Length: 538
Image (cartoon, rainbow, N blue to C red; front, side, top):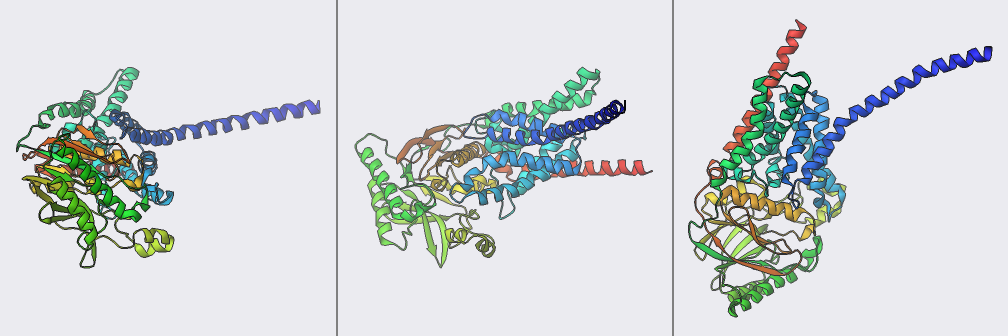
């Protein structure tokens, strides 16, 4: 009997211990759902970006992000925002570590995701306000504005607008640039969640406030209606005649950072491709271009200081017989410049443009002494910092005004707009992507140029050393493109335009307005929280 009693007692004690343990694990799993959803929705946002054309996935990505953030406290919202940022930026920016290893890539993502974490906290704060999707979308754009300016003069890569080159919202770029385009996409995504949330509440309780339902539907509908209404702003009609442009892609000896060690070969390749094009023009196989565009770093040997390099460029320009824009690395007064050089076949170099938005850790090294203490190889890769240009670059080439936006500059709103307001009738984005091999970086940057074409209603050419080079119409369509790591040339007649879109005229004002909206929403939310706390204390 004693044994039996003891057995029963032990059995009775085991049951209450097991059940709480199971419930504890269940609660932990439930708590992990928002974290997993935040990370996966960030990954979904990444999948919406080029080279894929799944732009519409940005909407469910922000719908899920809105779901995990709504009503959260500060600490939870910061963590969930950070996870969303990691899910989005880790795969998006993996190309930054192609040649230098995972360290810089992971450090960049860790820093950039902090901005997204702050946005997450802001979205959670405004999520209980009437019409919260609009406030929350403005908070996202405020976060993008901050990322585009700091640290080290900003890093706008991953703006929502840059994932919409194939999307239905693209015409909104002509209305207010990347801030308005991005705001519309995020608003529609948050609006999608709000509509679903209210529909489920109505199904469950049969009660939904009409004002809330109306605001939810407007959040979903207004961006779509706005995009349709903006469609007449998108045109590829020639306003100032047309020009036949040639884009040269000479290719490089090999991919990676060490392609620079064969600078003369890169120059020779671009000269050779230009001479090959000249022979085809002479044979009547290709239309004669009015001017020729070479990519960034097509002559990393300074042609002003090196007679051999000057002779190679001069021979190529004379063979084609039209002005050539050459991407060079030039030293002047002891300073290094990433420079575009306008080369006349008869007069030689007649104009220059120095890149203004230079790339941190690529063209100059912030915190050089600290970085050197961590890894001397990094300081060896950037032995001398490039200096910044100070003036917009618009070359007059056979009567056409061509605005120069060198590679990394295409990510910055101001750098593109300044060329258009300075009179550019078309834009060229000379680039050098050989450092990043066959990564998605090339396609992400190409999408930026497509958005810029619509934003300012200008033809955009993209001459790249190793590809993908392209010609983009003012409506964002790619009409000619090359492969990667091949020598090739593109020749096409393109429209010249001088009218300015609302986005060009307004400049930074739409972004300022949205930042003010975000500040107003955050102020309202904080004030409401303080009043509720005081009422509770009373």
